[in-house]
Length: 119
Image (cartoon, rainbow, N blue to C red; front, side, top):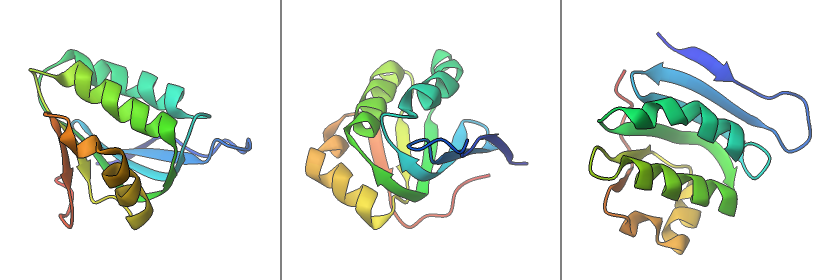
């Protein structure tokens, strides 16, 4: 069963919706930027304490800036040796940002395209 973790709060620059889609799986939609990466990081923090992969579905993510890239890097580093960060089905814009920055070169970060999320 999915549940909304947090969503658009009406303030400029905080247009991110996060829905828990299953164990260690979150769906992101909207914009991931400096205005909301801290909140998302705090949400993901408990997931980093236990071993296993963490999946972020990015299909609905329309925009991501360098703060989002930094969050993905720090999340993958926190999981190192205990699990992978799986970025599932990024939108075309977000996929371009991931490719341009070389994010896929991190050993435990996996970009998965064209799959349905596991529930």
